[in-house]
Image: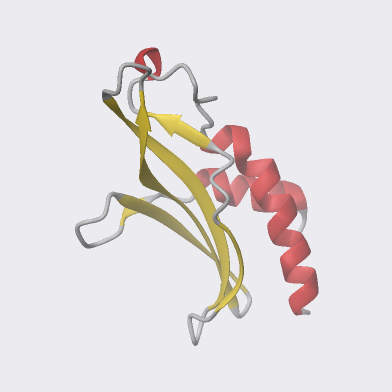
Length: 115
């Protein structure tokens, strides 16, 4: 798979809420015997005055599609966004379109290691 095709799939695949109490959303992209999971989960950010603001951090994982074993993961939280950008000036407002190249590049490196 080439970079442009994977970027297109990362952007174009629908994201779905993960069942449960946690505010967590994922998209699953199947690549041969693996699945690339790209998602985000709720974090807590804070204003200077201590009030909370809803923020989310992106993550991605490469898993074996049969066993669901994690092969590689990036949960660094380097890419974030807030539900109300005007209230959250510390976040870069990283949308999937903004980070898809980074996700695809790292994921392709992982796929090379697995083959």
